Image (cartoon, rainbow, N blue to C red; front, side, top):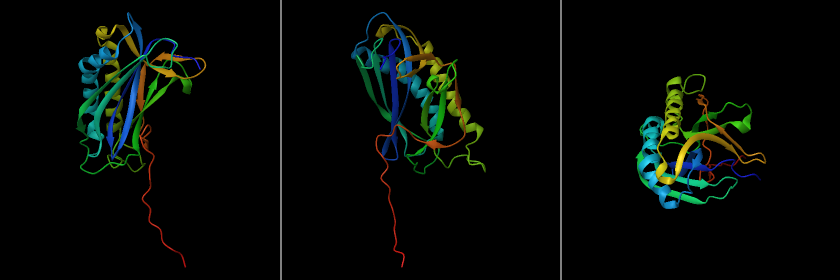
Length: 221
């Protein structure tokens, strides 16, 4: 399996979702002057990346239920041609809780933000599964309204633009751009040019645990 076609920083964020953990993330294709250390990545997370993700979450949290939050941020540095992280960074945050409703949120509900590139085909686009309270602004067609999908798309596009423009030189990164990567034999690293969010409620991917159903049964005589 081919490794990354350029040095890559994988940023992973998430938090609690109804007793489980949700995760999503963004990959950055890098130009580097030196290999970052784990200490430098921790400093980068705290001083540069975390404020950008907090701004993003403060936008989307208005569509999160009260049992969901934003509470961790991690990153992994992969050298050119490798699928093994050479350095990692992680910070634990004070949880920022969703404000859409005092109701608890199912760990299964999400909206999908698609990461689009200049290239066609599924291998050339990515997805972010972001929690969304299923009872919010759902129309008669069963889809969330344009206001909700607009919040997710706009906040995510703003986040990626800010990541592209951020100064990450303290970690030896001279420039970066948000990319779609693919773990295929022909490794892909295409720049993200736009994002798109549709109104169809989806299942939250990348949860820590599988669901264990609470069931009620009765005998038929």
